Image (cartoon, rainbow, N blue to C red):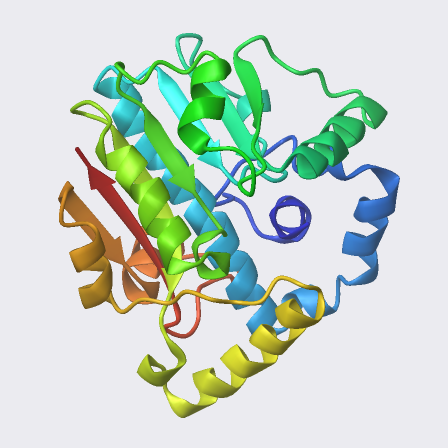
Length: 267
């Protein structure tokens, strides 16, 4: 919904050009975006929308770099309603969307209801992590573990246990040279200024109420330790992302605070 709001309300040029973001919502969710239009222009909402579109844009920029190095497999971990596969400009790139079976079924229903075709280059990989492993399900879906791949892991890390995070990161680290990963993560409460601690508490209570509590946070130093098996690591926050994507805009869209960070790393 926030990616769709970016297409509707924000000034051109857009940070993320996504012609599928609005159509995939259909009438029900598009109406919700329109009902909350006034809220979408409040500073906190603008900042969150900026972060969401920036992390998708950053991931797709890094994917383009991976493709230029010969990568032909793109894996979206926790794909949700990501739309890249439906506007993929690269014919040689095979996309694997990994998510819980129920989430994938919901997405298929939205795609069908809104007449969005599923491209031949897309493979959906249902994974119930309580009973299945990522490696096994990807292999069964036709993923080639011997060929380089690029992984996007957006909006997922804070909800994981440390064990689940390390297990998935270890799988990526065993991929061939030129493989890479991009993910976002959040700073721990103690590493944030007092006002940002209050905002964190408010968001944490809301996600816990819907049954998806936060579990996992890192400082940049801790993340660097987790990525010890990788190279060419880039870990950036608000200042760098604003410089990359929100300079000289004619609207107020820009990231705020210091809590959200994005990191890319390569084998």
